[in-house]
Length: 205
Image (tube, rainbow, N blue to C red; front, side):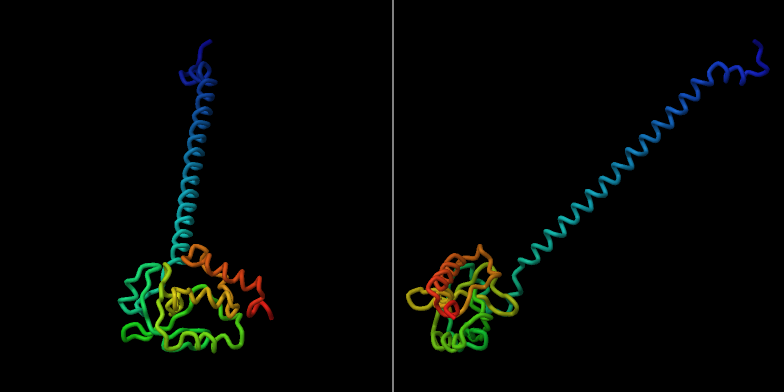
């Protein structure tokens, strides 16, 4: 058969193969496009997830950051967790806030692990009677300052932990937000358990 032009001849001879080749090429290109598109989305999602986790860790770390301890004199700032030093209790103010004298500085302090919101009417009077004008040993935990107050363990005569003593007597209750990894947590928790068992103080009302 004679073809009027070469194009018609070639199309007749190879047209089917050419069309199949073009279709295959389109399929390959489409597949590659989808592959790179999916990978790009996966990488973006991974980046977002990593950033979210990093932000969460950063937030958690911020929650555990100790407040600025510049309100403390240098001799107290330099103490490590559990290390004791002697101070004078000038007086005890509202909500069992201790006024401590360290060097020439007066410091407002709270008893670690205690919650004044549940207490006996005479708790403030009793704590003031116990501590006002006395010299005591104090120690910090990992965090020294919270909400502008020095957070302290108070040790009286014969190394008695006063924080535990008033919980055992039921004069105050254990702070429910206290870190269970705190140095004296077990001691304080056991003291409150004893108060509950014996119906001491607030537990007997």
